[in-house]
Amino acid sequence: MEFPIKNQVKLSLLSINENVGFARAASAAFSAQVDLTLTEIDEIKVAVSEAISNAVIHGYGELVDKDNYIELVMNLYQDKLEFVITDYGRGIANVEEAMQPSFSSDPERMGLGFVFMDSFMDELEVISEPGQGTTVRMVKMIVPSVEH
Amino acid sequence: MKVVTFMKQGILVVRLDGELDVCGANEFRNSVDDALELTGAKHILLNMQGVSFIDSSGLGVILGRYKRIAQQGGKILVVHLAPQVKRIFELAGLMKILTIYQSEEQALDLV
Image (cartoon, rainbow over the protein chains, first blue to last red):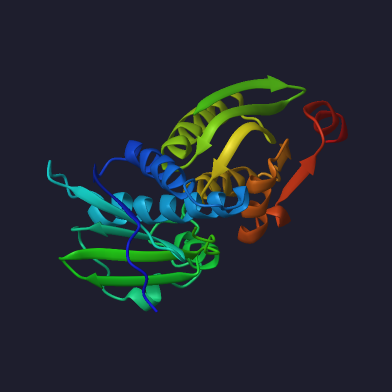
């Protein structure tokens, strides 16, 4: 059953490394409005950090354009927090392959980004089209609080 | 990310303060690679006391330095891992290649 949206924040971030920390802090602040453990908030921070880093590093990468923006939409429902990260960069040709542990296009990266997103969140969905961009949708379930 | 490097007992000590994400990782890489070049140190002692956050970019840069010094038999010693950072290290399998100590003094004495 789908609950209505209780709160929503939409951010548009220029694709630069410095905004990864900004998005992460925003996700922690958004998550703080529900009753989560510190560990759960840390998990959300890592997952969002990975998704935004992927957009900056792989989505836009060397594509230099003043209009390289990443959209971060955060939704609060009664039963879950949802984070949707979209870039309009180069996209991923083979999503299944890219999500494998240790898949990395760079020897200095561990290829663990999707592994962390998958293990720290309750749902992970990746939609990508080469040349069009990538959308990552992640959900963290929360225990519904009793409404009065 | 603040990165302080200095030599002690022939070991490159690296004190980190901040978040080890893609930004922190770049600063870490620049400082530590410069220091390794300059000193020719064999081992690195990482003091993680000020690190409250790490993601795969941070892990990658630590792994990269490990690969570099391991060729000469070097090791990475780590002190003061926060629980949430330790958990990420464990999930990534990094604990197998790092040696954890209680303090800088203990690490330096035991190497």
